[in-house]
Length: 189
Length: 122
Image (cartoon, rainbow over all chains, first blue to last red; front, side):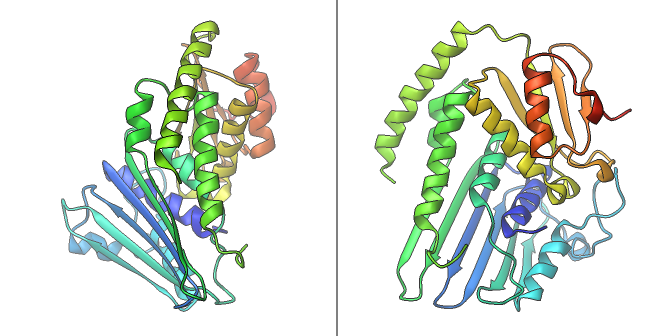
């Protein structure tokens, strides 16, 4: 993976696979505390303590098509490479919360990447999931900016009209791209 | 973000979409499926999907369903994309980067001719 945004997409797919109905993705870039924090919370089936330990192992997977899992261990490694870490809080039947922290200024920190494309791809490919995206930035002077996208109203309004109808797609893409652009830190690429 | 304003705009856009859909007869139900397992994502599946979506947008292509699937066990062929038109058998493509995706959208989804060079033998 070359971007944090790609990891987010990958981890969110785990939530979908765990039959979550609500998935929340939070991204917080904080230059004051020099921290990039991403959190994925879902209400899927969760994991018992034993499984929770196993998912950190690259050779654990629930899939049957290939023998290695890789998703969570890759994110953990990326976080640890930039003096951060990963924590997983879960309980069987009670969803899961994965948090990854990176030192923002660390030379090995992966770029945040194209958040808008990640969010749009998730929205389009899983129309039955209730998505909440929250992107927040804090600059060096402590100014906070945020873009929150909750798809409840969008879905209510669309009704039976598919999000992949060209006009809708253009609207939603524009909304997300503009929101993220307006929130992004000026110094980060 | 002024939420109410954008919601009103959404209503208008939705009406437009409905009307255009009525006007255009779509040739059967078209489904585009992008594989989004860890392998797919690492190989560039998000760019593949982005390319599919932007083709739909720029060509005002109505009636196409875009979804995803997990790893289907051919990780070395990722990004993998499948196209199903009406009740025709599904066509599975391998190594579909953004450019190939655009080609498939144009030639297969729009004009019904599979892009042979990228079809995976199943």
